[in-house]
Length: 435
Image (cartoon, rainbow, N blue to C red; front, top):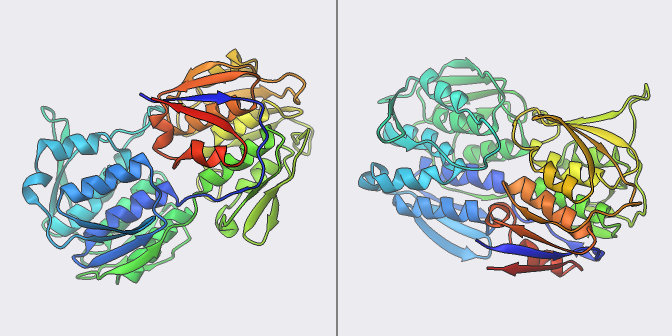
């Protein structure tokens, strides 16, 4: 396991550019299975989760060619049926949460798929009911094999239908949409997720010949087609990287420009940081963060404590709550962080408390942060990253702390951030990777 040795107290300067969006990459990479023709995708980030999914596609017979930095071609002309039914396929799926989105494309393409329970971050319950019920609604049956810890889905013919999702799951919606594009008839999905990355998936599928309307809303209509063709697609910049860089600049009192952020696709993210008192200035498609010695947390209009909570798009993504929580530790004022979706995502705050942060963990979902206003700096600490987002939050805390901190298990951070230490060192951070 690798570790980061982080020397705190260094200001950042200059500019940094976010890489392609991890969550979008995992969706559109699964979509290449829906056609036998070539699909070319650009701005793919070189991160662990995405690389593992590309390797998994190769394993089941997809021709993959690396055309240039971040640009790949995929051709799923012939899939390896023997490997799709192998123990190794299930083991590979088990190590990657995003592999759950293989179910829809493979079921639409082959009529059958055996799939192991996926892995991913240990952040509490992450149920798959929306995915499975969506496939059943389209006419599939599934059976659980207790000895293999795997599920077999079968559907000789998928049929379009109306469905109201029990939750606006992004990956669940993506899975159902990918299965529906080749289903017979029309599928209507209400309470669909409408995140920019889901919109991007629909745009790619439409470019491949699908007929999806309502893109960007929570009501999608998909007219099934008999086949899809090839297309080209470019990923959006990763909004979670953008938010992470805003947090890094703010907590270290640094002046920083974040380049090419696709501002129109950031939704409420800039405003969420502004409510902490951080100046987030749009300059065309860049974000400029001026150096600030202090940032004041807003109160609600009635004077009550500000609450920052996650919500389905266009609400705040849960992936940034860990970053916002750390940034609030050095703000002026107090804020309640409410993580609604995952009950284990706030458990990393004990490490921040060890660093001197004033945080009251009310329950698994809520924490009150009382900001130090930079009057008391965080102290160095030795930490272990439990998941991607807690890992980057720990890194941000360490960058602002007095002394040198150590973060173990950083392969969790590598799953979502490409060469993060190299990119941050180039703008003034002092981070060393230790294997």
